[in-house]
Every structure is written in structure tokens, then in C-alpha cells.
View 1: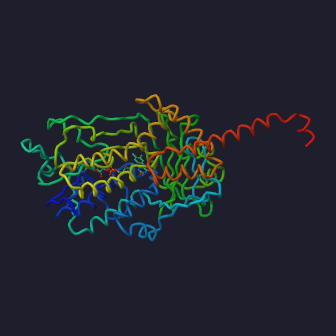
View 2: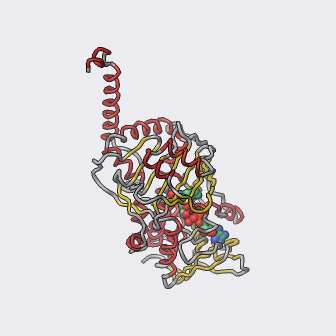
Amino acid sequence: MGRSGQHAAVIGASIAGLCAARVLSDFYDRVTLYERDELPAEPANRAAVPQGRHVHLLMARGAAELEAHFPGLLDDMVAAGVPILVNRPDCIHFGAAGHVLGTSDDLREEFTAYVPSRPHLEWQLRRRVTAIGNVDIVRAGVTEPMFDAARQRVTGLRLDTGDEAQADLVVDTAGRGTRLPVWLQQWGFDRPPEASVDVGISYASYLLRIPDGLVIEKVVVAGAHRQQPLGLGMLCYEDGTWNLTTFGVAKVEPPHDFAGMCELADEIVPPHLAAAIRKAEPIGDIALHKYPTSRWRRYHKLDRFPAGILPFGDAVASYNPTFGQGMTMASLQAGHLRRALEAPGDDLAATFNKAAAKSTYPVWTMNAVADLVMHRATGAMPWWYRPVGELFDQFLGAAETDPVLAEWFLRRFSLLDSLYMVPSMALVARTIKHNMGLFMAQRRTLRVPRWRETAS
Ligand SMILES: Cc1cc2nc3c(=O)[nH]c(=O)nc-3n(C[C@H](O)[C@H](O)[C@H](O)COP(=O)(O)OP(=O)(O)OC[C@H]3O[C@@H](n4cnc5c(N)ncnc54)[C@H](O)[C@@H]3O)c2cc1C
């Protein structure tokens, strides 16, 4: 084992904080997570994680990564009733950018994903972390890190209880609202350069009870697209309830009542799913959430960075939530943290920030292409985004009826295999051939002489 120290402190005990603590517990004598929010003993929504009341998809890659950090997690989730998802048409209805994929029974390989509610997943991770002997979770807000200017390093944390905690390493998993850029500036460092995309997303969600037997799918996704700025996601959770989220992109508001959601479902999902939603009974109140901007704080670009602190999770990058990637990306960062702690050399932050940037780049870029080219988002757009977006639209069009292309996309969308959505030349050729075939068939149909139509 590489580096070690006496005490590591983590700001925030959400998904990223729990993943970080799990890794740190193998390298430090003590690990303390400081969380300002009340942490429920049972799976339950939390005030500081308002997104937990909306559809939260754990990607297949995220499930595998979390299982590697927390062995036995997936079996425990299944035992608790968490539905298993395979990429079969009877399990998932998946609409991306206006194309419905995975409808063919010819998908060759299956991959498995899991559909825990967000509160359930966080609770499963929390109870595992709490059970680690050298980890504590303390209910306290962090006001700021302590910084030793002479050593140019963070030495611990000040808490809103008035206490101070010394630490060899602080990991900032405070989420999108991280104050690290401000603290860096106060300590005489540059703020990280930021990439941002104004996606203007609004969420409106209900928990539903759907009468048994009406829906066999476990996951329903109808993403927004050029002609339709509204989308819908629906997941079946471990207790048999359904989370129905409707959303709008580019500042278009989704319906704010159940009747409106039913009308939207009529338009954008197959009739049997829309009919099931109409027969559902909403439980509790509607939950609303706004997500204006995706943001990547590019710490790896900084020449100078203080020792003793690391940004992690949404504090580094928060992605368009309708693509369902944030938790999986946090689980990948846990792997980067482990490898950085094991690596020789003493610039932990540089090693970690570089590795995190490497996995962020392809996912961030594909999201930015989709949002800026297809979802009317605004932000800096290199010239090549538009042609890549148009080509990808062609690809998805072909993937509707070509299971090989569909499977390639679904595996990458789930962040399996590779984080890069760059098809090989063979797949590009297959796309062109497929779409040319469709085009020619369409032309032939249009050219059928009237006498032949009447004769047949
Ligand atoms: C609407 C929405 C939908 C989403 N859907 C998905 C999805 O389908 N799939 C997916 O993978 N991801 C999704 N995400 C992203 C996902 O929620 C995050 O990536 C994930 O929660 C990891 O975030 P985090 O742990 O870094 O931060 P957060 O979950 O934001 O947690 C930050 C924690 O830090 C604590 N904290 C903050 N400041 C302090 C402080 N000063 N002192 C002490 N504690 C502090 C907070 O109380 C909180 O507990 C969605 C996000 C949104 C907004």
C-alpha cells in the first residue's frame, strides 16, 4: 500500500463522500465525514439532496464500480427488492434524441443494471461506511479548511460547531455548491478554469403507485430532442413504487400537475405506458427542481494547487442530470483516488486531478455536443460539435433498426466498455449503408406507380 496518514477528513456524506471515505479508510488511521444535513437511519430523502426525489438512474458501470468498492452491495440491494435491469425490450423503453433504441430481440449481449431509489442507494452505502471501524460520520457543517500559508497546505477543517479538526488530507465532496474555488483564491491560488453549458433544465416528479401487471418494463426513458424539449423518465423502485419525472430543457417548463404529466406521456411514450400512468395513484406532493448549468471545474489545468486537499464528485463536474451519469462518475473517481494514493510520488492532487479529468473529458464532451446541438443549450461551442452532433443523430437513426449499432450505443451510454462515444470506421460505414438502404427503400415506395398500387 502507498501513502498513508493519520486523519483524512471528508466534506459531505453523500454518494461521492461515501465513496471517497471507503477508499481513504484503507490508507488513513482515521477517516471522518462531516455532514451538515441530518442523515436518516432508514432509506429516506434528505433536505440537502433535493435531487433524490427525482429519477436517479444508476448506470451499469456505476453498479459494477460500487460493487468493487463495497463487495456484496448488489446482492443486498436485490435482496431488498431493488429491480434488476437487462437491456431487453421488455425491460427498458429507451428513447434518446428522438430515436427509440433497443426494440429488437436481436441484441446480442445482455448487460445488467440495478434500479435502486436514490435514498435506498445512499443508505446502502452509508450503512457500509458506518460499519468500517476507522470511519466516523459527524453531524457538522464545514465553514472552511485551515490553510498553513508557510507550508502552502491545508491542515484541517473549521466546523460550524466552533470546533477545529486537524487532518492530513481533506476531500471536498460538498457537491455543486463547493466553495473550493473561493478558498483557493483566498489562499493566493488561481480559481480553476470552468467549462459550462447552460442547459436550463427543470424537473417535476411524483412518486406513483401503478396497479400490478400494467407495466413490465423497469425503466422508461424518453429524452428530449430537437422537436420536443420535454422528456420523461420513470423507474420502478425497490418497494414497488414508481418515480415519474418529467423535465424540460432550454428553460421549457415541464407540466406541474399530474394531469399535465399524463398528457405529456400520451405524446412521448408508447400507449401502454401512457395508459398505465393514467391509472396510477400519485403518492405525496409533486417535487420540483431546477438545474440551470452543467459545470466542469478544471482543476487539472492549474499550475499551482495546495497540498492536503482534493475536489471530488459533483464538486469537480456536474453533468446534465437527464443523462444519469453523476453517481457513476463519482464511483469512477473512487478508483482514481485509490490508484493516486497507491502511486509513488507526493503530488497526490495532481495525480488525482489528472485522472479525474481523463474520465471527465469524453463524458463532458459528448454531453456538451448533445446539449448544444440537439437540446438548444447555450455555451461555448467548438466548430466540430455541430458536424459530430449531426453524425450522431444519423447514427442513432440507424440504431433504431440495427441492433448492432443500438447495442454499441447502449453500452457506451451506460458508461461500460469505453467512455468515448467514437464509433469505429466499420460502424460508421455500417451506419451509412443502413441509412442509405432505408433511404432507397423509401424512394422505391414513393415511386410505386399508381396502377400498381390499385392492382395490388
Ligand atoms: C435533478 C438531478 C437528477 C440527477 N439524476 C441523476 C441520475 O439519474 N443518475 C446519476 O448518476 N446522477 C444523477 N444526478 C447527479 C447525482 O445526484 C450526483 O452526481 C451525486 O449525488 C453525487 O454528488 P456528490 O456526492 O458529489 O454531491 P451531493 O449529492 O450534492 O452531496 C453533497 C453533500 O455535501 C454536504 N455538504 C455540502 N456542503 C457542506 C458543508 N459545508 N459541510 C458539511 N456538509 C456539506 C451536503 O449536505 C450533501 O450531503 C442528478 C442530479 C440532479 C440535480
